[in-house]
Amino acid sequence: MSDLPSLLLLLDGNSARQPGLLLQSTRRLAAKQGYTIVSEHHDHIDIMIKGAGFRCSLSRGAGLVSEYKPVFCTIDNDSIGMCIALELGDHIGSGRTAPTIIRQLLEFAVSFGDELSLTAVLWTPAKIASGYDYFRDVVGQYLSGGAFPVLPLVDFKSDGDGEISSAGLSWFSNQEITVSSATLEQKQLVRRAVRIVHDIAVNGPITEEMEIAGLEPNEKLHFRLSQDGNRVDIAISSIME
Image 1 (cartoon, rainbow, N blue to C red):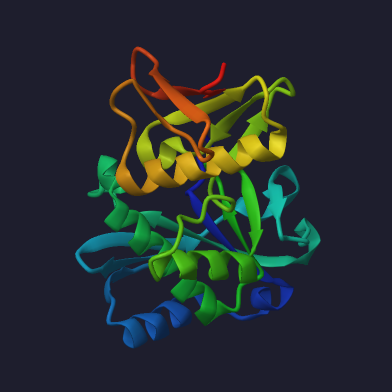
Image 2: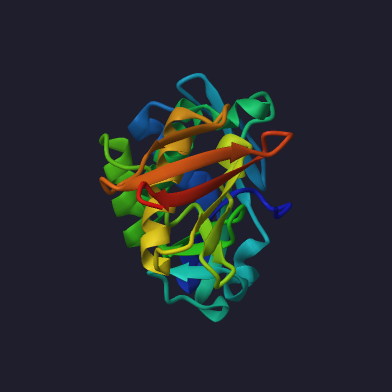
């Protein structure tokens, strides 16, 4: 996992010619949304939202775009003028996996993004670069009661032999998954992995081994936990097998 803050907001080249943009934008946003600014510094601002603390700061992460997986994103390093990091306050600690905190962080990102007219969003735990319009759309759906925005926040790696593994899910649940099947194609595996990631991100990590029905009538999902509980292996089989 990267040592950079988890959420990086990217602005185009025009932003570099606007001194004080971070401070001015944060003040406007706080006034609009009722956020409380706790402290202001030349390179970062601490803010309180519904009892949870967040920090927004200037970041060095803009030069990393080429290293990230693009999701509806076409920007390159040369087109970026400023990078602003959003991170959780130190007091939150392991509480970051609480769905309420996750929702507040994503809501803050979209509110800030609209204020700044973002170009893209980098999610460092999974090394994903999302175009801002797409990020805003799927996060907005989630905040309105829709599905967890899996694709801009969790990546999937394939071994090319009927198995895919998540990357970045542990930020939300302290747990990663591997999904395997002897019969399903890659696209079908990803579809099921996305569904499982949604359930874990919204409801919490898997805590026990189990077997449940799959997406299709003849499917079964077999959940097996690693000894430390940090990884879940899910084997998909047909009831006829």
